[in-house]
Image (cartoon, rainbow, N blue to C red):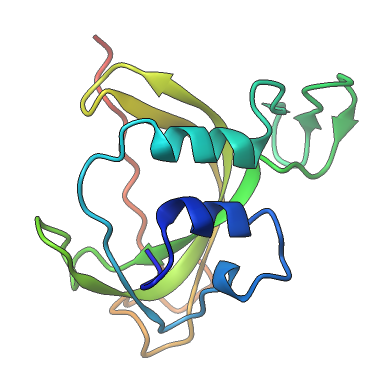
Length: 156
């Protein structure tokens, strides 16, 4: 969460690359937006990815257009998200600051109901890039040195 910017506005700004609020940088400190945002985030993400006609995953660089059915190599469902070091900045209850240590590119399939918390986002991890040495606490040396924890909710 970017201080002074609502979650809805931040997601909407991602649709317009000319909006300064849509840009976060390595080493920048952001703040958690705690609490359940019933309906709000789901609607905003659906707008971001073009639901209900969002593209579908066909593999890396192979995205099926949700309207025309054509195969293409980019998609509005392909988004970049900030990564923080959960070992260094563990997120608990209450508003907290955290530092951006890298970025992950994910293909967001859809918002689904069910599981813990009521809703979740189905996505494919496409790539990960860490910030320059010294920003995070990772010990690796390559472009994938940022640790990413993948979470899968249990099937009911």
